Image (cartoon, rainbow, N blue to C red; front, side, top):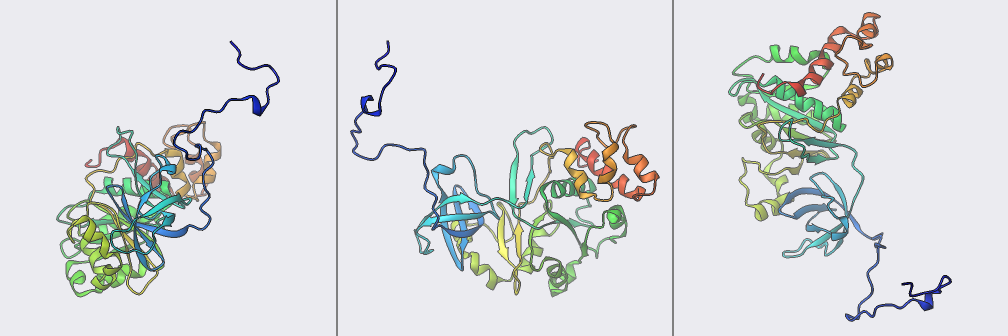
Length: 336
């Protein structure tokens, strides 16, 4: 039964009284144009440590952001108490557009995507040359994730006093990836940190590597204790040990505007979220040759136009081999 006629007016509509006496709900959200800008340094159980100007501010995500989560490296807008005083809490009301994203899954069959770091310029893949032995498949997977997420990869090879780097470097030579080779002695006397710092200056670099390769030890050498005071609240809140990373943590480089983001050691690096068609963007010498490829080409099949592109002299055959090796890493286990 219709309660109103065809030509109803707003005055004809009955409004349910608001017994609480507050304003009715609205889908219109405040713009928070006066919100302060900050950078997320770490996340722990719903609490975010954010750098606002030169202050460390504890914050939580606003309800209006819904399921969208802020991660380490995110540029965010905050309102509320921004003093950074003890027992104060600000509110993150906006997450700015990301320039890059490092993502992974637990394995290649896991549909759940984990966003690790946002807005990093580089991904430093830390690998020991011995003890433990290098895992090229894991390196390949990190490179694919870097290319897909918009990060420039860097190889940092540790423990060169135990094994030479030549064989591993030859494997990645055709990718033109910057690299730094270090030894345990150089880490102790500071020479290694200086060489690595030269590659990181002025950039935000995420460090990734499996346990035992010396990743966190290197990060500690890059960021002296006095610089760690900037993020001193982090250890007080989480109680984490200095040499064990259980959550991503952004730290400022000494005498530089660069940042290091230390991430937890990984046992696997799943690529279930990766679209193989995006990896070709990291090979600008090969990408034009894909115009003649059949639809949904995997770039590793008989009709792939890249074979003719290379045969015509437009690119080095070693580059095509490197591309196909990286694309095939989704079908190979990391220990293969």
